[in-house]
Picture 1 (cartoon, rainbow, N blue to C red):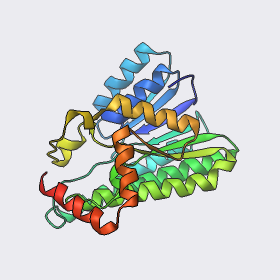
Picture 2: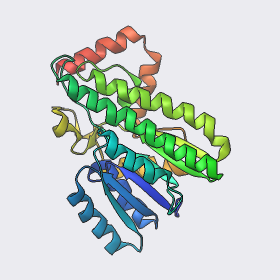
Picture 3: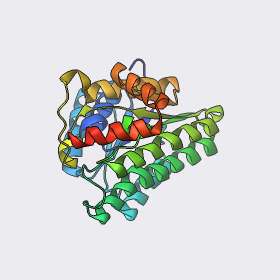
Picture 4: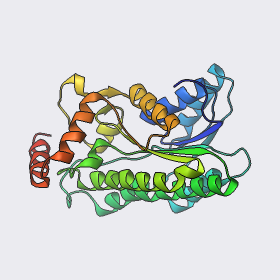
Length: 262
């Protein structure tokens, strides 16, 4: 990322992976930060390190976004006029690997609350504040290449990311003229804690994986340019372009074959 593009960014899921990488890159660029995740102790460690390395302010907000009360606290921070946020990064999210019906339904619902409901409500808070104040700003929503096709073995996760992709593009068209850009970031396989936490066993060539730093940099660059969608990596661009041109029956069949090997 080049010169400083934002004054203050609020990042969900900032305790590891892509969210942590974005926090460190933004801090190095001079952007003040509000870091959100469930694990407050880990956030405090990251915040202290970023403060030490860069002359920026870093707030820590420990919150489980699946909990409506905790989510309301984060919404209020996004909507606050004091020390305002002009970049919202909705990065928090997770998924489960396994046939639908074998995963507890409460876990599936919690996944929707984090991946969809929290993202929608925080985007709503950001858009209302920015447009109401007549300010320019950005919302960066982390989707996935899974948003482009159904995924047998991960049905709920792919559905939530399809929502993020569609929703983000629609809101971008509604708000861009007012100076508020919404970008959907669609990474593919990224080396983070996402896979082990969700029970995913993925055996593919190393060339198909990206680092969290690479994905974070691509997302922030796309957001700074006001791009509505950013698919990271040439191989993921080829994949998503191909999927859009294939019959849905073929896409579903391919998804099922891949799931059977995971």
